[in-house]
Structures are given as structure tokens and as C-alpha cells.
Amino acid sequence: MNGPLTGVRIVEMVGLGPGPFAAMMLADMGADVIRIHPKNARPALSFLNGPYDLLARGRPSIAIDAKSEAGREALFALIGGADALIEGFRPGVMERLGLGPDVVLAHNPRLVYGRMTGWGQTGRLAKTAGHDINYLALTGALNAIGAQGGPPAIPLNLVADLGGGGMYLAFGVVCALLEARGSGQGQVVDAAMVDGVAALSAMIFGMRQAGLWSGGRGENQLDGGAHYYGVYECADGKWLSIGAIEPQFYAKFLELAGLRIEDFAEQDNQELWPVYREKIAACIREKTRDEWAAIYDGTDCCVAPVLDWEEAPAYPHYRDRETFVEIEGVTQPAPAPRFSRTPGRVSGPPSRPVDGAGPEGEELLRRWGVPEERIAALRENAGA
Image (tube, rainbow, N blue to C red; front, side, top):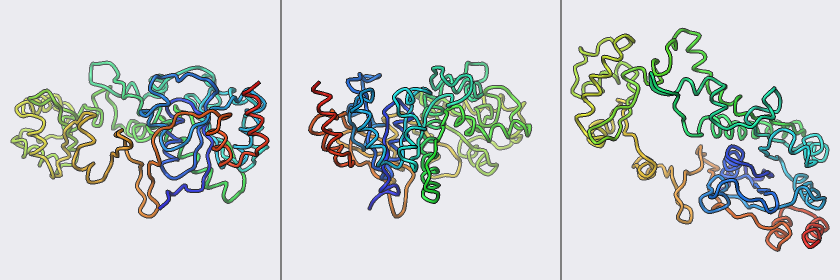
């Protein structure tokens, strides 16, 4: 079976993090994606372009000199036969290469032009450098994450780079592709990580304005302030997560922990949360993480062990669902979400970029319909 995006062709101008993640998602769903690397460029991180560069999986890579006339002509040929293009450079870079939206959309009017940046294509910070932590800092999200009295906690690069960035770019590209099928017209998708993080924060903004998120960091229901929603250290130094929000789950959690519901009766009294938390913490420290996991296994208490990176792929539920797969000896997350009729799949491991003027590169360009004269021009330019 083929994935739901089978037949869609996408040109990916290789960048870092969120752009490749979006392209990985689209390729996992069956899109035919070709990665375009700058000629003779060194990878920004040592593991890139190798077997562990998982964001590059499932699609071929080719190195083309976009600054040369022959390279630009080859790219125009690729883009002319594509449904979408993805790029993740600072505003103005693609324009300086002669590959900005105005030029490209004139060449291929039905193209979806996906642009991935931190700050967006407009606004006073648009051309300023930044990273995930900075985008989180200016959206309010970073300030809200962490323990009471401690500094903001950094949630890896999952929230801005990948959640607010790459996933929103992939969503935007698919939305624009659906619209283009009806209208026959492409458009620019301006995906900014700050916009994505703001959108992800919609529920919290609503709760604040409803008076349900009035405290500071680590003082609210969903940020670790509530005694029934947080992590607790166990006897072996490992951790247990508890999310017993609903009264029936709360009562069952206390019962299985050997605690009396009467001693924790005022579940939503925030003044008592610190007192309740100390009592629960003392209880949880009496057993190991796995002992608690066994007690709560299969119950509706919303309690789960905190696993590390090595433990998670082996967790029985994930084995049942094949949430993690192994490709050529490298363990990695399987494509998500699941489709009943047209499932996604990892079509292959990450590939090293081949030379656009070499035999493998020429064959790849032919498969994408690039005319022979443009392939020959690349070859001649490389030999000049």
C-alpha cells in the first residue's frame, strides 16, 4: 500500500531542524521528496548526512551549486515538476539565489512554497538569528515551564523547532496542496516557530483569562503545581508521573498508594497543594519506580513510570503498536499518525548527498524529469 501523499513531489532545500522534520513527515506519508544540498557544504552538526540523521530519512539527497547558472537552471527544472518546495533560510536568502517566491511561482504557478523561519517573513525580528529557546522565551511558554521557585526549564527543542515549527509547516503545506487541487494556484506558506508556539498555547491563554491559571511557574494545575499532576521521585531515584485529575482517578490513585482519601479530600484547594504534595512524595519514596508501575499497571489512575530514551522503545505498549522501528540497525520512531487504508512508512535510511554532476546525481535528476541539456550543463560546469 502507498501512503496518503503518494504522487506528491516536493523539493526540499536542506536546512536544520524544523524544515527537515516537516519534510520527513511528508516523506513518511508517501510524498516523493528530493533534498537539495549546497555544493561542497560542511554539515553544521557532525552527525548530519549520516545514518543517525533521522530527520533526513526516506528521501534521496543531491548536492547542487544553486549560485551557478547551471545549478539554478537544474533547480528550476526540478521545481517546475514539483507540487511544493520547502526552505528554511533567513528571509531574503532564496531571493538572493534567484529562487524567491515571485520568480518560482511565475515559473510554476501551482507550486506551494513552504517557508520555515523562527520569527516569520515579516516583523522587526524577521531577519534576526534565533534558536528554539529564544522563540519560546518571547511567546510566554518558556516562562511557564519549570518548578516553583526555580528557573524556566528547557523542554529540549520539541516545542518551538519541531512542534511549533516543523509540524506547522507540514500542516500548512498539506493545507495549501489541498487548496491548489481545486484552484490550480500555488501560494506561499509562511510558517514561523513563534506563531506555532503561540497557537500551541491557545488553551493556556484561555485558562489564564478565565482565572484558572493565575499563579506563577509551578503553581498551576498542569505545570506541576497540583499535587495530583506532577512527577515524584521513587526509592531508586527514578521517577513516577501522576496525572490523576478526575475525581474518580484521584480516589483510585490514593487507594492504591495506601493513602486515605479523607486526608486529601480538598483536591482543588490550592492552599493545601504543597501539604498534600509532601505527603504523597513521602509515600512514593517508599517503593521503586517499577514497583509502583506494577501496582498501577492497567488501571485508570493516570500513573506511569518516567522512562529514559533506552527504555521507551522496549515498553510493551509501544511494541504492541510498533511505535518504534529499526531501519538498518538504527532505532527510530515510526511514521505518525496511523492510516487505516494508506499507511505511511519509512522508505529508507538517511542518504548522503550525491553530486548533482556525478552518475548517481544525473540518474536522480532524470528520474525527476530534468532535461538532458540541463544535466549536461551541470556536468560541464563541474568540469570547468
